[in-house]
Amino acid sequence: MYIYKIINKTNGRWYIGKHNGSDPNYMGSGKLLKQAYAKYGQENFEKIILEHCSSEQELNQREQHWIQESGALTDPLSYNLAEGGSGGNLSKFIPYDKIDYSNHKCKGITQWFRSLTKEQQKEFHNLQASKRTKGWYVSRVDDPTETYVQNISKWCEENSVDKSMPSGLNNPKSRLFQKQTKGWRIRRSDMPLLPPYVNRRFEPTDNKCKGKGWKLVDGKRIWYDK
Image: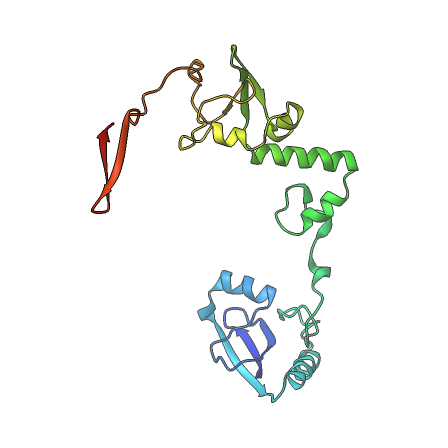
């Protein structure tokens, strides 16, 4: 554990910080310091060890001491923004009044959302839900005219259709693929148009097993004519 000072060799600006480990290559994590690294390159900075500490409590106290004694918070050449120790409140340096929370990807979105009315919040939720889900098309078996449905779950409730059916009717691996349920045909918007519906419920099928039997021979199923 140690207290260090980092100096910008290009313009003389400096930073005092602490490190609670033993990594000799640690170069600090200050907000302005990181910006300076990005601008000048870390190779243009040098680090000086000011003193070593034996405990975290001592480390915090000595960091505060060095920042106070050096005038780091008032010297315009200093990169320090807080008094040090166990951490500082840097919120005063954040321009909240200039942040557009309506398009902010960080925690500020919460503050923006809470400023909306209940109706606006509900409208926002519905808009987000519609962006996350694909649309659907529904039609009757006797009328191929399709009707667009955005919220298929709500539509299923209103028409007494099992909510698992839309997925099954659009899964090529399902026995329900492109069939119907309660007289309805359902197509996901990214699926091709449905072929004309043919009711094959009462058509005879050749399952190739009729009139045959089988028996096991050496662990294998052998078919024979009855």
